[in-house]
Image 1 (spheres, one colour):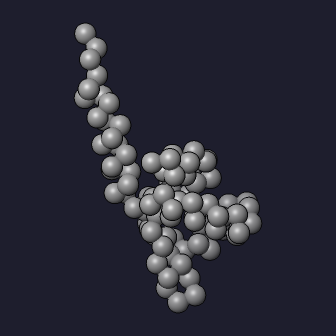
Image 2 (spheres, rainbow, N blue to C red):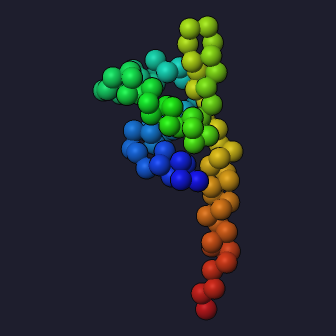
Length: 89
């Protein structure tokens, strides 16, 4: 869970997740939308992948990234558990 929160803590990584909400993108397509080096974007993508938030598929010389909502669903379920156990009068 710590890896997940670390991944979500960075605004660049959250922007990448927002981009992937609209559909799959290659690493190059993602990098083109940011004003930073491709190795920096690659680092962000690697952290998102380690957290299980994205999946990477190699297609020839390209890597295509897909949003993995399963991890987010599990996180939301965990957070909602706190609300269900809320004992407010």
